[in-house]
Length: 325
Ligand code: RIB
Ligand code: CA
Image (cartoon, rainbow, N blue to C red; front, top):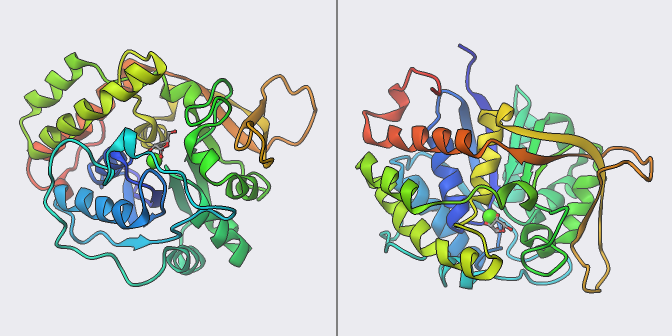
């Protein structure tokens, strides 16, 4: 069996980021989580940081190191999604305030120090605005040579969700996205074209309840609260699990389809700001700078997610020897 791959998650919890953290921590045989870096996004940094700590405590992993990063985007303050995730970013259950504390080191310094000293190339998974990542790249471009792959929740080939044109993570800091897209890496972009098909259902909530473990109970309460916004706003048939799709891709890439394309970020201050223009048919013959996903095996995704969450009802996860079923 291959050994766990080193991974850093950059996020803005938010309910779906919270689920993504619990997926990572449920698969210690797959991921060696070097740390979680946090940015403002769904809600202000003080809450996104607190929520990342809450997720680690709920998973019984007070050893995980959480680093607070940039509270705002490069060009202007972040846009908040409190109507989606609640004032503190975790509507639904009242989880206890975390006892574990965030590290004193800034997230950007952690990213640079860890990547520059890692003996192995590191996976970078991102599920929020890309401000921390972009600032780290600007400060120390050599970190790019120490990154194995970047998988980012963001963008849309079709409609946006925060504006008619743009997806939230990309809209929150378009300049940061531009820095990633011009970095020479080929990030895998998990956009709304995929995540608006990864929708919770009440039947699946019943399945989660039947797992009968504290993590599943907490997630069902959050995801039930998260459900209505997407149904009422976008006419979806459930709540979209955007960020979990990033972790699912890292665990089972065969659940997805996509292709290498050129993506351009709209940096204007017009209504299209933050839009990711995806040249899917290669009309411009420009260098491919992203791997954009456009299909997901939804059934396979939920089998994977349920399997991961079922592990919180068994003995200590660190003794898990089996791979994913
Ligand atoms: O557009 C969806 C993305 O924005 C998700 O990452 C969600 O958590 C919010 O950050
Ligand atoms: Ca997020």
